[in-house]
Image (cartoon, rainbow, N blue to C red; front, side, top):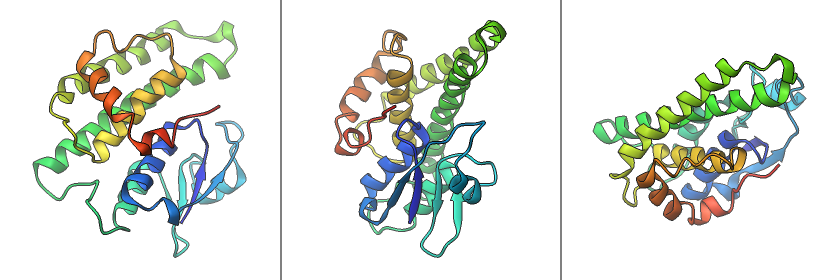
Length: 203
């Protein structure tokens, strides 16, 4: 399997953590690319019609894209404990967590794009505030749910950890821990896992 990779992407990190946790990391060929919304990498564009990372080329040549799809495919490629639970309440809890954490990341990345890619005089504070409101709403939900996380590892847990890590990486001045103590306590423990330590964002 070949993964188009960028070390600062939280969605790529999600796939990488998944690979470590499932024992698939040695089967993954990682190609690091420089890509941006206005200047997509040619390989990524060929693999993904919307020209975004992560994109994965499976062993049979099929191209897969978007981190939930890639992660679910990878979960079908190993014999260990599944990161996507079977049908039932555990599955819906895990997928809800993934959706909330991915939504947080979507909003956070839109803030980065507005702040970095558009000229300062065209920045919309209303837009920035609205996106940060989504980040804060997702944090509050994740904080409430985190008291039940325990030592569980699934796709929702992985995505939540990557979202927390992205806030630390791109929003170091944001004190998200102050009003989300349960989530912060859980994240401090989870972030020490080898899969998280091996995939720290860079760039």
